[in-house]
Length: 542
Image (cartoon, rainbow, N blue to C red; front, side, top):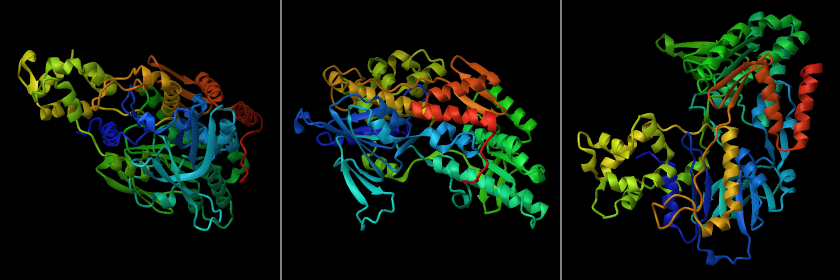
């Protein structure tokens, strides 16, 4: 079954190679929980006095959070990443419009590392392959540094932390890579900023027709999620508060369009926030087109399939397009997942079937229930959401009209039962908040490694004997923001508390200032905000 597939793949690899594999993989899973896959080599292979080597791939939220919170001097850390800094990605839309400068939201990794008592080495390179069996990663330098073909190198590890983030998902739409901007990296934000200003400068040339000027000043944003909505709001403020004063002759030609394939923008937020955002954008003159799925992008036009009008194909001329529709898995991670294979439900079935009868009774499954729910929290959520009192109701649903006490399931029937759980599984959002919590959790595991080796506190191992050392990761949602422009922000906080308006904007300021990774970036960000209030945004093309 597809349920639990990612964890299962990891588990099989760990059990197939217990003598030489040590791996920790950071990953997001179902809402309300997360999983940490872990396996260790025999401790006799390495002297106690020798430091274990931890390799961290990536300097994003998870990798940096792990690095900041790791305090165990028994490890030496090597960080491998194509960028030598941490970027505060929630402020990237502010960088695109000059509200915040790029240097204000980045912190060099070496600044973070030098404050640690743990030995940390950084290599600016990109991981291209993981050899899990031999505990090696293959890296390639991303710098044009005349190394005579020696830009590739190999790094050994005892523990590997994968925190590389994801790629932009283009859904294989023709022309997206060639013609659209993305907004995942600092370089993307800087490029967008230069392009916006270039569009105004080109439209201000005297030898262009008004129709061509309108096309150049048409800014299209694809994707109605938080990033797309915040960028649309930031661009609207930049144009109406700063650019029209500098380009008064073309101010009436500017148009911003937000394209969303779904029925609403900000669909992951409370409906009250979604409705307010759509109404505000309509008042601000931002054209929100829902039910518009982009099927092709050329250098001057975007083709959309209008899902609300029977699939009619329309073309939209544009001057700049920003693609913000989702994320996808990086190629070398796909290769790694193929290496480690997949464990099926047989391990769970075998562990629960204590009398080796080939079938599971309700009593047998119930005895393993706590460990299963701790490992796979989606099962507990499914029972709760479907108002089931216990595992017996789930098994009865799979077996049919049979008395609960007489239910016995074979392995295929158990797969059928759990496949229904999988059908309602929800993954954790790919946000900075989730990744940061995962990195912190993982650092705490390393800090307590020796203690948990002696006294494991995790759930039962379905493959092998004993218990896992650590309790699985659990995500704690602290709320989310959606800046909507005009110094107004929507905030959705725990407890179904929703706040929209200027007060939420000040809450946004305070949270984002406090979450900076250093006092240097905190001071720079606050200074940029203050400068913008006094002097406006910077519209120079640098």
